[in-house]
Image 1 (cartoon, rainbow, N blue to C red):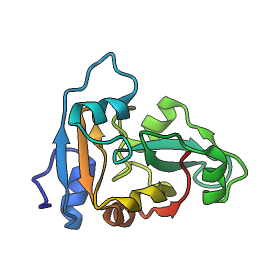
Image 2: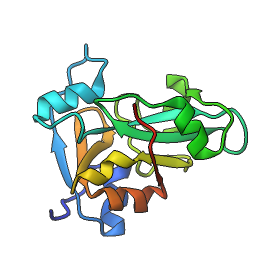
Image 3: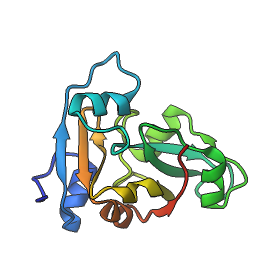
Image 4: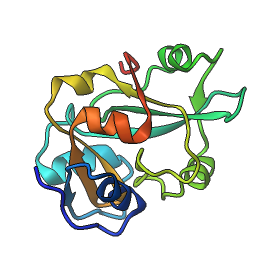
Length: 164
């Protein structure tokens, strides 16, 4: 998988600058779609277990009060497991406006890579089952495919069992 030219997002620019191999996958985003991960899987013909969604989570205490969970679009984030993984007492989903403001990306296109505010990040351990996974490249209709270990490295993430 060879690195491709920048797709014009902070995520793809960061991957290029870091020398990480990746491939971008564009697809048609439909404005009426609200299940962004399922739409990406359907439009790209990729198994929902291999496409991962980026979720901004309110952990309520500490600095920063937000964290990022990355889980397969086929599942959901286990908030109790996530809270334990980041050492918080509780976790709830961040409000969409808060997630967008913190990440610098639009909801439905939030990439875990090159977020405006670096946050503690946890990648579900099922990502290790694949040679490559897909995550948002930083805008609706664009995914980036890369090795899970490379995603871990560029985001500073840790592994944990956070999906159900």
